[in-house]
Image 1 (spheres, helix red, strand yellow):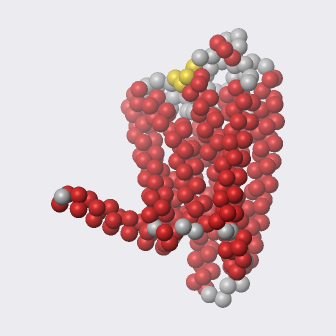
Image 2: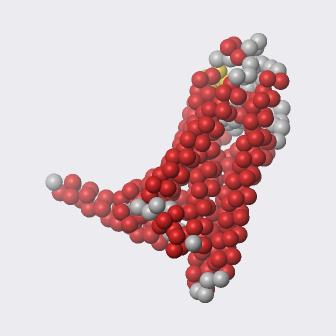
Image 3: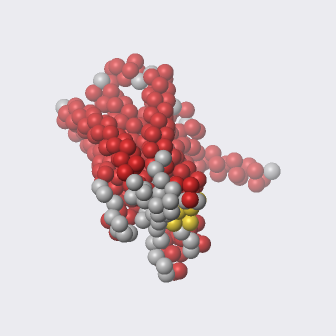
Length: 315
């Protein structure tokens, strides 16, 4: 292939050439996808339904749930469709769309987690100033900044990736992952995008250091709490946040910054599955499902749905 215009489609990675294993992969991805959809949609519905949850923390949780839904919905349905129909194809435009929206949602997710760490820091370390610092206008500005930054991230990466001519269309990954696309480049014209990846990694490292520092301050405040139960509750809330965020960022860095292998790699596949599936699946659990207020809101929502259905049936 001489240039970029000659690439009309890409061939994504097949999990297996055996039909039974392809169907097994389809049903496994379907179960994981449905679990992610259900968990995040329940969180969004509960927060919207219960006015008691219209606070900064839950406002950010709605944004996080939407970003998680967006990131998995960008790549997983196409992979499931390919497995079900025993194909590998994705159009050139479809690949551009995947890269654009996946980077948009994942980038926004990352910056939102940084904002949420700050929100927890203010709530625990400066509770008397919380309402002043995290008022409705401030929260709206933070959320808007997160989405706009994610959009700029996406435009930067997508334009840098697809500005290069491609000499092959075989992508050794189950979706259009940027490092594997850059590997198909015909020349060194992909180097600016590599520079963008490194620059973005440095920014993300700064955010990671900021998050770790806020949690250090949070833990220091928690240790000074007189109530043992209060300390246990705060630790049980903050530690899972930090663990899942660390999994997300380190697997993502490793997948994007290490040179991709020339042939399909189990390590590359495992890392991609971890950073694409694990955070969206665990975020509803660690941020919300373990939260008493969310459980109460979900119970109320369930009762309301059941009573509405019963009324409709009687009518």
